[in-house]
Image (cartoon, rainbow, N blue to C red; front, side, top):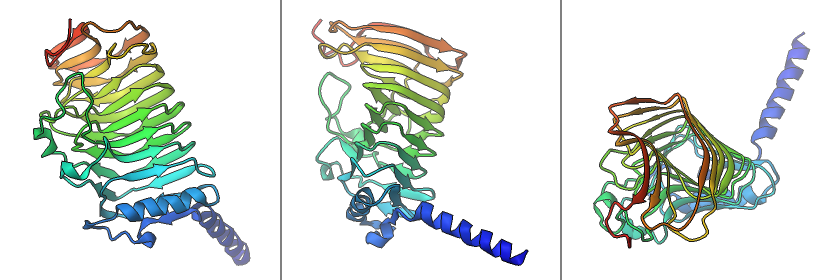
Length: 316
């Protein structure tokens, strides 16, 4: 019996070792995890090694606090499924806006079958919120989002926390058939343009069990968002759950097949909203479902605004 136990233990250890063999520890690439040293190069180097290695692979952040100066580019395509494990880790962006050259802090692009688990991503955006460069108007903005997922299809993002982003917290672009679950987003009511989760040009996305506190839309949908299900999301403070703003650019693709169900909005400016710019280009929104929505102290529970122009700068 003891021999059988020993053999089983051996095979279990071998299985665990095999499953984690492809994970590259960022500390093995020089990350200090002291909350002061720039660990950005170590993160990028760990990713490059993992992405080029035998699949499945990925990177791991041991528990600790990591300062990560931009750019953090976790880009594929890789040889197979990739994993980012950051449970117990806090990753901080530099607070100074001048250290950013583009509109993203952490960019995760062109990775099929990504699994991202855990981690608190702190954008340290308090000083940036005072900056007038990024007003809510029809101009581009280079103030960085916390995490930008692009073309990461068939993926799972879970137990991730984003706090105090300088701009949008999480952008999800063209990530078809992807699930975000147990997402926590935290920023104060006075943090401008800090949308929680922004979706664009994707098909088949599920968002479930999220708690979002922010200074703008908790969840926002841009053009060609199709077949998206949002369930068990708590929102507030914030501007509510918004489809749009749409019609800013010509030839935008329709928004179609949106289900918002079993969500709670507390103390938000708006509840559920569809909005298009004043003098918008033609477009369409259809097959939208709002079901079992609980609202408490919401100023405008249901809004359909086809003349959206908060900065009064639109050409009507």
